[in-house]
Image 1 (cartoon, one colour):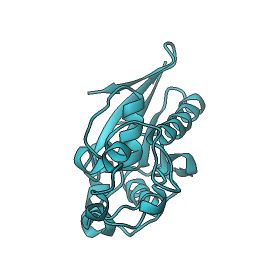
Image 2: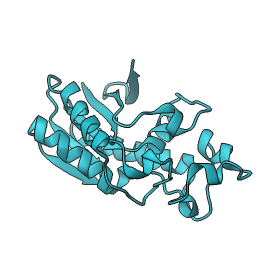
Image 3: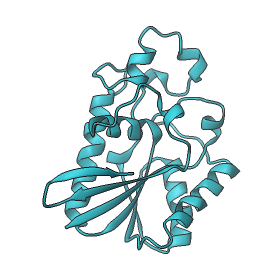
Image 4: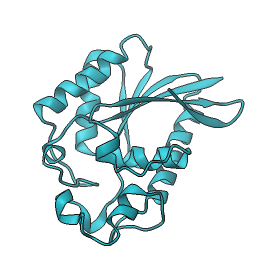
Length: 193
C-alpha cells in the first residue's frame, strides 16, 4: 500500500524575483509565477490527483487555486506546511544577510541553529515531516499534490537523507515538482527520481 505525494514549490512571487526572504511573510505571485503554477497542474493532469494540500500562506494558496482550476479537485490548507519561520530575517534581501556570521550554517546546513526569533532547519523539517505523515495516514493509497515552500523543502529533504550544501534558491526553482512515496508496509518515505 502506497501514498504518492507530489511536492511542489509555489510559483514565483514578487519577493522571490528580487531575492527577498519571505519566510512566513508573503508577497503576490508574478505573471511568471502564475504560469509556473499552471505548469505544475499540467504535469500532473494524468496522475489522478485526489487532493491538493497547500500551506496556509497566500503564495501557496494562490498556486493551489490555479492548480485546482486545471485539475478540478478539492484544496485544503494546513499550517504545518508553512515555510520555515526565518524570524528577524524575514523581509530582508539575501545580499544584506550573506555577511552574517551564521548565514551559511542557518541556510545551507541541517542544524539546530536559527535566525533570531525564527525556527531551526531541524525544527522545520520535523514539522513538515509530521504534517506529511498525518496526511499519508489519512489518505492511504491516494495521490496528493502538496504546495509548499523552497526552504521547507530543503529542510525536509535533508531530514530524509538528501542533504546539500546549497540554499533553497540554488536548489529549487519556483514551480519545481518532486515525487515522494510513502510505503505503508515499510513505514517509510522514498524520494522517486
